[in-house]
Image (cartoon, rainbow, N blue to C red; front, side, top):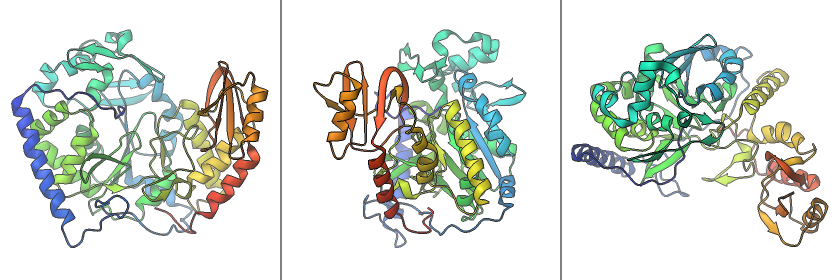
Length: 454
């Protein structure tokens, strides 16, 4: 239930709240400057800022029983009453069958298909819960249950119904989502304080249990670690994108729980004034001298049906790295990816992690051989003067760099960037240049170093 990171006009109501945030920002800047000018700092040549403690290491052959390591990990799935019935049930038949310790956190306590969903917000400061307009949905649910939901509250697939309020437009559940991240750490600790690791995902996130373990086994849980896919929140300051997933070691979680519980009113006000719940969490960790360890491209904010597997960002080729998470995944995609992971580990006895390249080659690429009827592969370059799908295919063939084409609503589009499976769309026809894609795969393989892990 992670919101999109578009820019919105900031809300400003209470001068005291703004003052508290300004004081906090000064403290954070002091910590950042101290770390940057420390002799131990290791500036990134590509970004010009401290990349924090990069996880490095060669992958090893895993013990066949390494699944037992999951006993030391708590998985937290974040959701909300407005989306839960659409997004969460698939995890009952996939994720919960693979992870032994899972906490389901929402903005409303209920039981669904025999699984207990816990309210993460019942420990937020009482004055905010009782008086803030953003908690109107929470109060309604508390009083009348799921029957209190109205049509404008509900998320339907990817079509979110936005509600106009005095403070701007937001889907009802997103009013509450930004308050959840810090309370979720408390709930996770209450569930199991002796766990070594705590991993947090959204309800529409696929997570690989085996690749998660392969990362965590390289790290000491008694040291403070905060792992996630980085999003900038200021100069030299980053938070972990919630939809991509993030992980906290026992030491890090204990530190942030202690800070939140001792300064709860302050942190709840900061969440109230902000837009994204991941930011207060990152600030609380930063003040505790726990910076973000970047895990991109292992933790992904995209979905494999339309993502750029050939992408290069922050000095890393996505193709060459293990796949830990994918975000915005549908029910069918989560099931398919879970089955893919099971097959991979069964065939290879879990002797190495599967990479994004493996997901493309063994899961996405076979889909490109199917019929492209009623499918839009999201090609981008418009070709004028094309009247049908056959002519569109010919246009792609004439362009030596074209990898795929699509024809729909009277338009032909081709693409030389990267191949995508695409999305179902009646009336569209799509196709791919499979020979060229095979050559691209070979070229991408040559860019990867043996043994690269994180």
